[in-house]
Amino acid sequence: SSNQMWGGRFASGPDAIMEEINASIGFDKKLYAQDIRGSIAHATMLAEKGIISHEDKDKIVAGLNTILSEIKSGEFEFSRKLEDIHMNIEARLATLIGPAAGRLHTARSRNDQVALDFRLWVKEELVKCEKMLTDLVGAFLDRAEEHAETVMPGFTHLQAAQPVTFGHHCMAYVEMFGRDRARVRHAIDHLDESPIGAAALAGTPYPIDRHMTAKALGFREPTRNSIDTVSDRDFALEFLSVAAICAVHLSRLAEEIVIWSTPQFGFVRLSDAFSTGSSIMPQKKNPDAAELVRAKTGRINGSLVALLTIMKGLPLAYSKDMQEDKEQVFDAAENLELAIAAMTGMIRDMEIRVDRMRAAAGAGFSTATDLADWLVREVGLPFREAHHVTGRVVALAESKSCGLADLSLEELQAIDPNITDKVFDVLSVDASVASRQSFGGTAPAEVKKQIAWWRARN
Ligand code: ARG
Image 1 (tube, rainbow, N blue to C red):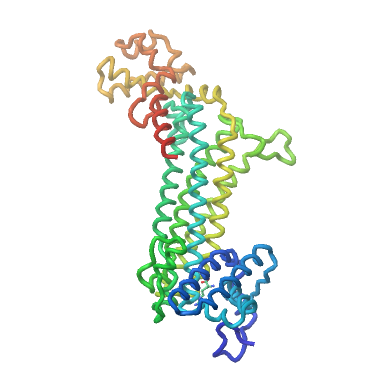
Image 2 (cartoon, helix red, strand yellow):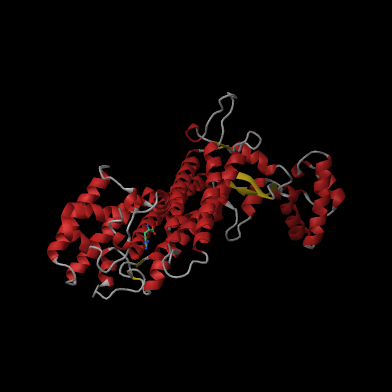
């Protein structure tokens, strides 16, 4: 038998494979609440404008509310024959209230309906992400405050570069996740236009009021171009872009946690709650959560590339290709939430091994730049020459397998006779860190200013 929603011109029903490739109910049932909200706003507007009777509108709204509770309680039977969430709900409405149900789809198409449902869903998801990122930033602010004076090696090329504080390192992530949250807010602002009323693509001859539905659904205003409205999935692409950038940040942090928690580094100890054991090696404590966060980035980035590729080259307006948008967004959203939540837990729980960080901070001649700067400041050497002199000091220490501060004054003076014993004041990691008071630098006083700036904005 032909389709009860659009089968008027069809003599027979679809092939089983046609039905299978066409149906989206398996995943778009997630949109049921948004679909019902949208339909209630649409029906209410139709009645206000005299396009349907108030009596029919009341039946429609009551029926939709019944369906909402049926779906919530799990008693609703979804049918693949009815393709998608929109037609599943409308068919059930017809069973519940009879012919009045057929008036709901006046001045509307599934094209603007799905654009509406999906926008509402993505908007809610973005609001959720905003809150979760605020939590993650909060976790970092707490750790940064606690460790504003904890020295650790700062790295470039993953080689010890200059000492920094763990608090400063935490604040680098605050900046990154803070930018992610700003991108989330921007994405919300960007998608805040209502698609409903664009109809199939050309608008509608009925005297609808799109400002009324936009307002009822919490949008700032209606979209302006009906063709664009049903063709546009920028809001989904923006969500995925924001998610991908955030996932990349999470993966960098995850990688650092994996490195830091090795016995070789030993900078942190993960809590039992966020690590796992080995079924063969009893001594193991593995950073699986961090590794999975690192891996989730692959699928989130994949979702972005998938939807970009789906949309690429699509002629205006709606094409069924666009039905493939949802699984990408749903999967990315689910995994991004998991990754942010796992990371927030790990950051809050992990033990910072202050002594190990301090010992590593002094290794690798990490205060060599401080020596060069001292030669510039106190001896008056040009920086390039000071760099060269310091290089010879480093070579000497390396040949003696000792640190810069372990060399004697005589040994230093043999390289440059102008060096005095005051040089030892700048060779310690604490002196090095304390001296970097430039705006945004690693000095504890400066890091505390950064923390205060963010506290006022989180
Ligand atoms: N299930 C469809 C989707 O997700 C709904 C829109 C269908 N519109 C149409 N003209 N076939 O995109």
